[in-house]
Image (cartoon, rainbow, N blue to C red; front, side):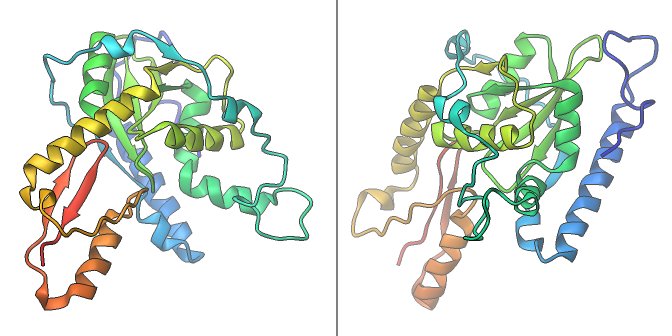
Length: 273
């Protein structure tokens, strides 16, 4: 992907105003173009999760930023991951000696599509382990402004942020746990973009704490969850809507209107019978 040079200023360059709307429209056009290409080769269902939007600022206050005063190391699983070694998650062909380039490209086209790869290569990447509210508050405190949000077929999100001198960087956030962090960083490494000095702000344990608190909140928000019998379907990577659709198809007309609980880590749909 090529970003026109006149849309993105060089680092430390402030002689001209930052043309955020033109940059956004260019990135949006290229994102939609990529989605259409994926649809043309039969990957439309996965491609539906790829889109970008302008970041909607909420100016959060009273956010505890203490969990983000420390940084985490790159997980050992990611450091040990060798993209050149045959991996059945990437290549299903039994006769292949290694990961086939076409298989790797398919993974990247979904999980780290060209627009994101180009931005990361040019501006660098860091990781933030917290909710979107915490993300906005933290970068606001560091004098960085979130401007664009990138959706992929995952709970994870990528954000483009800028500072007062119009420097940019890409932030990976929206992660729901350590395994999610590992999977995303392996994808970055697969693309050849993982640097040894990448900043991972916060600790995966904080995501565990958020999930615990949100489960307790769900029990209070939807009283029916406290009274049995209930069937619990555990899903991930955006599968909650699919699981709910299957449940309602099985229950048919016997199902009452569903109640939706949506938080940063835990989301669920309760369908009473």
